[in-house]
Image (cartoon, rainbow, N blue to C red):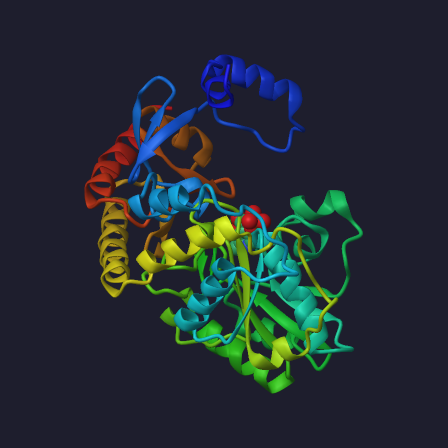
Length: 401
Ligand SMILES: Cc1ncc(COP(=O)(O)O)c(C=O)c1O
């Protein structure tokens, strides 16, 4: 049997059994077996169709089988799949150039994931602020799972089993200007913030807090790092999420949709920060992989179009309004938070059973913490999918438990 035949000859039940046998148990998987898709539609192994409102946790911004990504893959299939960062290749260079053009941030480091982007950002801030050992982050933030990124992550259950973590991180509550002002001092290298906390319950920062973060960092000589791994790259209706608040960071970390579905992360930074980083300070074998970068370039071409971003913004504004209107009629909905196509629906109950019921109704959704439904649909999601979701959510929440 050829390799693709082998992949398609295993039944869903066999896959679940094999997975239970061979994987380290880092994931509690849902018995859902997506096999193909188009746009925001997914099809499972039994041929049942779903609206995807999670996009592989914000990765599949262009949905599935987008023609520009398919044609890029086809063109590059016979090309070099890997070239060492010791040499030159057009794909990572043109991708970095595009990121500079779109973000206005002059320097780029490419890596493979969000966690790696934050690790690099931690190291860059240490280099740019030598001698300063403190980093300020937010309570309930999420920045990744390696020890450095975990040290910045403000969710105790993720941290506790791995103590001691790298020291010097101080946590302040989101949107608490006074706490931030008190935490940042002359020993602070950087403040790390998600403009919209994704894993931490979908919590947008206020304009006042982000403006204060910039002011406080400037006053104390600390660097402002925005983690836009989940909320960046068009998800809020602007290319960079921080543009919504008019805040200019010193560093931004990106990943998730950047590689068009393949692993790719990036740190964008100022000339001053980049100037502190010398050969040998940091590196990665795979970071800036030519295939991921070629897909990333195709993805950026689409996502950065003004009409594309306007549609995300208008659709998001409409959807947020519709969710808030639903909340006035459905007492189980306690709060609705978000922007663009990133929404959290806080419930009076655990979200897990609710998203399983929604899956049975044909909607793939996520959770954030225990009580929040998280929606991160492909940015190409049609309005019809979101319109269909509203009564489905209502009916699931009004069912007798
Ligand atoms: C805001 C944020 N930062 C960092 C990460 C870690 O990214 P990755 O899983 O690609 O390592 C995530 C992933 O969910 C994230 O949402």
